Length: 304
Ligand code: PSU
Ligand code: MN
Image (tube, rainbow, N blue to C red; front, side, top):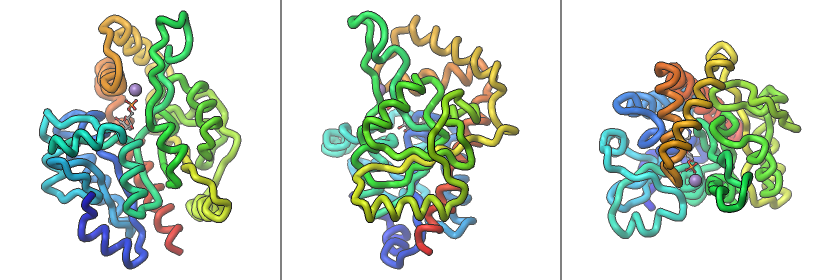
């Protein structure tokens, strides 16, 4: 693992650092918009006085704090792979390049000593993962969940992606001991929409409160992550009926094509985009920027 110069200096000086994931760049957003969003996220963190550390794998090396050239390479190369934590060893041995998921990014961020991490929407339990006749159950549950169960980082996310089974995901997070707090909301956000229709039992109002909660988690010796569920502003969300219609279309397409495994999430996000004439893309970008801004403020609060 290589930590970029600026990031390692900032960490040594106790300055605020925000980790950003890269699967959203390599597999979540279309080219060339993805690069623009990645560099825009870094600029946004900097404008708030925080050093960004986008994490990914370049030629077999896990990099915490990709250079501009490395970011451009991951964003423009259509052959880069999607890497969860378990994929890292073999991918690195093969000198592969890839975007790291929340699971892989959280692992590398923690290893580098970074405490706060921003993504768009977390992975979780897919619909049909555990329901229906046993032979039809996909058992598809993102490794993001089990990774966050054992990594003490703050993750800022707009809840989980609405393509998932949200109540099942919330139950799994409870079982896994992942702390969840709504940011200025009692409603668990649904990624494209501010309210998923499911409640969240704890809430926080300020970055300082998140920092205080994180310090308590450390004093108490809790091993797991604190998920800050940050809803997209209602003015920027996807209209709920448009969202529901697009989601049904995407899920029907998934059932028809038989796409499975790690291609499922990128496939569903693309189909929602197609069904909304790219409006969902604008919302995805707004969601991500909103999370980067809050993540940066939390990272700054943790240095005070
Ligand atoms: N947030 C976004 N777009 C994305 C993702 C997050 O706005 O594409 C990625 C994250 O990297 C997350 C992954 O870890 O989707 C989940 O994939 P899976 O369900 O295969 O674990
Ligand atoms: Mn999966």
